[in-house]
Image 1 (spheres, rainbow, N blue to C red):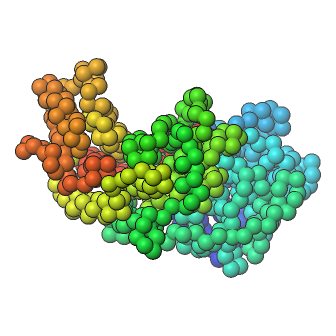
Image 2: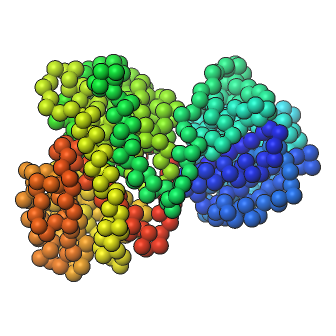
Image 3: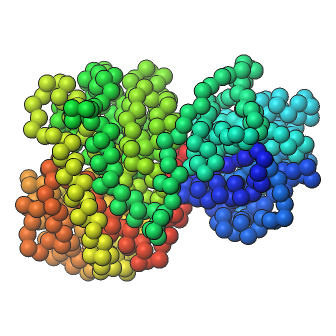
Length: 600
Ligand code: M6R
């Protein structure tokens, strides 16, 4: 979704802002802009479309050493140059970028801006106009900024510059992520550390409703009531090199290929010096104390949660419910007496999941976040965090985070089961090492999957994935992967459920991909494949060594039955990738989608 970058220092700012915005492209956007400020005044450049177009538009002869930039993912108003950020106040004195949604913008407009002519359809413009109106009362920019922030309802990350002051960027946030990056003689503002890793690896967290004054050599944080806040910086664990594509055409393929390394990294990170699983004792106690576990997540993380439920219930014998975050927050089910909430989120910033965390915290329910970004909002606000160690995931389509989430959930389940004294005939570290090797053998067969994708998905308008038991959970992820990047209408179904309605959609040549990795449903899913084949479907079976039949299209090397999702998903990811490629889609940045969904 929207991205913010700001810089104040000694160097020319346009390249820093443009580079930063390019690093945020992966989040999804439809317009972009930068504003730079020097002694001659403010220089504003905005475009509808890509950063490349913005780069062409920026006047290279303008030099300034402070400025703010933005990528916008349209919420209020269509993608257009007028609606692109930065937005300016009526006099042009104040310029502002904003991520999030201002919920009370009509009320603010009616109460404060009756005499102001608005030039965009955005909620953001209300904020910058409001600051100017409030400034007229106080003659004090900090006071006007603080007052405006105190009036806002909703989610926001905001950076403001004043055309009459080249020494300061004003910053505040609520619910939306925003960091201050620290440098020697310069400081930065970013909605995502990824935007500024080239300049610094040291960051200051900002908490909701704090007012932050960012200067070249100083950062001042205060609360809305003026109380000064001191906070220690932290060093981000991301390596700038991990955010580059290297020799790959797309991040998605790079990230699919990284999965074996991620498995090995997880084995290393969750292992003690005796080769035993290492999980924080507080997390273990929280797991043991729970009479029911509620997994909350969205999209691919939700799909990983479904697999996690299967693994936890089988190993730990504690009931688990998996909920779509955006539903749970408005339709909370009856909870058990001692619930434990596990939030799964690659980004750690998903607004829907955070809305649930806010509610559960009010009730003092314990919470664990499983995330790829330890300093993220969900990580900071939950009681405990389990880190995925997957490295930055840039492609919008999540791949390595999904398998990392399942691997970490498995380790958590085994640790809890052992602490409960349950007998397990399962060494997760050893089994994950086998998974890593199998993943490697699958990613080595790219040409085969490219060919299969051509055969099955080049012309089709729809596709179905079927599975039973845990394979049903994997086909849901398979269909999400295919539809989000290739725009083929794809659905994942429980094999037995097809004939209760969906089979009506099967026509001559409709692709139906089945996964069969579980012995107890091997025959029944094959029966379901026969049913659709008899109605003209073009079928493909992905099975597991030991359960295969001669006609199977893919036979996965054997892994532990509990861990088959970690390997059966890899061909699905590759099929989706090549389908999108063959159909000429922008694999890493599918239309309408954002990597980090920070609005509800
Ligand atoms: O960052 P999160 O894991 O919380 O994100 C949740 C979903 O938005 C995300 O998984 C989305 O479904 C991906 N685009 C799927 O590939």
